[in-house]
Each structure stands twice: as structure tokens, then as C-alpha cells.
Length: 388
Image (cartoon, rainbow, N blue to C red):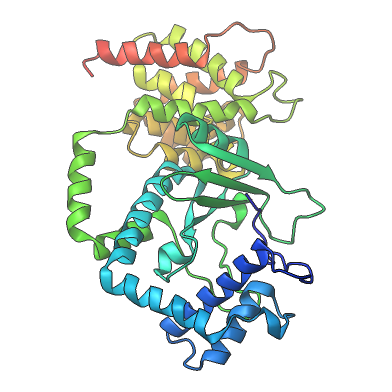
């Protein structure tokens, strides 16, 4: 499968004799694009539509012989009109948008942005779903895809080939519709993308924005989907596994954390918490999950963790995670007086300081811990005992 590139598809070599399949394919792309331009009323003159289409497919340098005939464009335009009238295109677009919604929800921790024809509804020759993802740990994206059993290919872009502010990785995914994803550093998740040629803002939407559009486009289907989801709530332990497994690829400063990856550190904290408070599921869960945000946004891992875990943990567990960094500062004597009083006023202050103590202690090599599956099974068993 070809990689993303502004120059894709590549210009074919000078034709010799009978045109090759790639040349025929390119001519059809130009004919389809010209028909789409006419169909969308971007241009009303056939020749101008063909030139604009050729510039988009070949780039600014193209031969007059690269242009399709008027008849070829008219045939593609007729196809578009027939699709529109028959309702087939609208139905396929609906299915493609619902597939995009499903994957955006699965990839929510990585701030997915949908763009391209799936969003705009423009007719396209190749109905591919296009995403931008934002993460400093592409391996965590790989974990999600593998958990879903996805058929995918991920490619890292070499630093020498990487453009300024460009993606670091490309992902191709085979699903109900072809999906292509570009992975950018997390700090760009608020970036406005513009067309290089015109400088115009390129349309893209986040998950909440896309859900609002789906509600507007297909209100009856949305109601049925909400009811279906209400009947089958997601398994919170599967969410924990997905977020925690990504920590195995995250390493910190070896001077402060000689134990290795963040998952091993988290399991050490969990083991100490389980021994200290064997019947406190919320406290143990906070010990295990307190650093999951480091695989999403290392610069603000607390906020990233709380956002990823929203709806899957209790308020008390969230409070431990939210304040565990302040608790470390409390222990070190660097926390301000007002913040100290606020923490001490909580009825869970003692457990919070225990969490900070265990966080400091869990920086050792060679410590025996349970593995991730055993830790989650222990929490499942504890939740069952507590009546869940």
C-alpha cells in the first residue's frame, strides 16, 4: 500500500507505445476528479475542470496529453449523477461515517481528527477514511490496534524524510473501509491544518464534534446506537489493560527510575498498595493506574490519565491520581502551604501519602511483582467481593 505523500500518486514515466495500467489509472483519477469538480460546481467549464483536476493529481507540471477526453469526464460525471439519484452513494457514505465513528472512539486517547471526503461528503474514487492521531508514544497506538485484532501496518518516517511539523508515523488499516492514519507529536493536537497551495484551513473534526454531526445527519440511527451501547457497557478492565500495556514501552530518566519501564514501576506500586490496603479496591486501582497518562502525554500525564479514564473509575480513585504528584511534593517539603492544607483536609489524606510513599519506593530493579493480567484479575476478584 503506498505511503501518504502530497505528490501521490507519482507521475508515470514518459509513455512508450501502449499506455500502461498506471497511466490509465491516473487518467481515470483525473477524469473522476474533473467530474467531481463539475458536480460540486467548483467550475462550470469542462476544460478548466480538467486542468484543475490534473494539477491536483500530477502537480503543477503536467502534459496536455495527460488530460482525459471530454467523453471520459462526461462518463464519470454521469456515474456521479446516477449514484446521487439512486441513493447508493449516500448509503455508502453513511456506513463509512459510522465506521469512522467506531474507530475514533477506540482511538480516543490519541485525540483523533477525521478529515477528507468521509467528513465533507464529497464524492471520491477511493472511499478511504483519513485520520490524524496525536501521541508521543506510537507504540501505545499499536497496542490498541493489536487488542482489537486489527489488520494494520505501521511505518515510522525517517527523520531525514520527515517534513517540518509533519507526521512521525503512517498507519494503514484494513477494516470495513480502508483507513489511513498519520501520527503527529502530541503537542500538535490543537494545530490548525492548512492547504499548502491555497493556505485555506482544511476541515477536520474531533470525536465530540463528529458525534454532534452524526446526531444531526442520522438522528434515528443515533438513538438506536445509544440504546445498544446502554445495553452493553464497555468492560472497564479491558480499558485498564489497553492503557497499562502501553506503559511497557515508556521509559524515564534512568537516574530517577532505574527500575526500567513505567509498567514495571506501576506494578511495584500496586503490589505495595495491595499489601497495605488489601480490601480497598479504589486505592489499589489508583496505585496501578496513576501513571497511565505517560504513554499519552508525558508533559501532563495526570490530565491525560484522568481524561482517558473518565467514566471508568470512581471519583475517589480519580482524586488519588489527580493529587499524587502534589503528594510527592508534600513529602519533599516543596508544596505550598495552601495546597498542603487542602490535601490534609481530605479524609483520604493518609492513603494519598501512602501512595506517594509507595511511588517513591517503587524504583528498584529485580523486585518480584505479579504480571499485568494477574494484577487486573486480582482487582476483578476484589470488585466481585465488593458486590460489582
